[in-house]
Image (cartoon, rainbow, N blue to C red; front, side):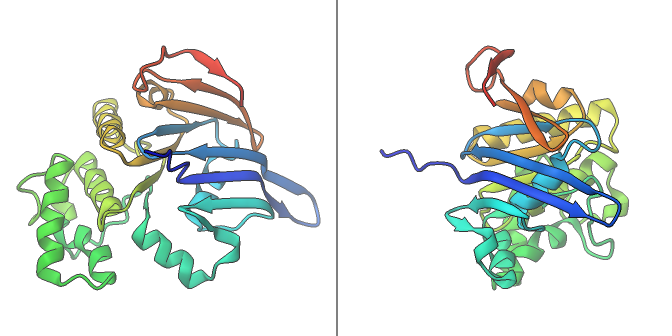
Length: 243
């Protein structure tokens, strides 16, 4: 079978923020690609550019220069509506703040993106329950966010991001507000999703993210300064490869 190629790629992508006082090179000439089944950790301190790069990959922001390709689409060349449609179909985004709707149950929160794509409510709820089971929340579908722990709420957010068969999961500091035990559980879950074929890309300053990733991409001052291959891919962790 032919290699389908990367699901996501960038070529010399830049994102500049210009003010009268200065020009901030938040992302500065990054080449990046990732394929189905990878768990990529974008690692770096605050201000390194990892969140800006993640927003570019999600189509939530557009580059100043260079290109971002997602599932064969150049994000800068398609309309806002098409970018929204692409996120509904291909890209799920998870934030540190889970952004669940408090008045909806866990299953209703997960079902929302499917309903937005025209799936009947009953079918969407049934699929939502299956997704909740897949992230370790069997029997929690009728609970409201206030009835769930922080770690459970984040799992609901991950299930929602995967709803509708989306192939890419982008997560920005998904464990930032969790204790070490719940953080480890979320990283373990993300690794299992990658093993099942989802492309998982996480922006994190937590060094534990690198332990679970197939590849760690280190960022500094808006640039990729190194990459490390992890254990899940079958290669020894600690092998440094060219940026």
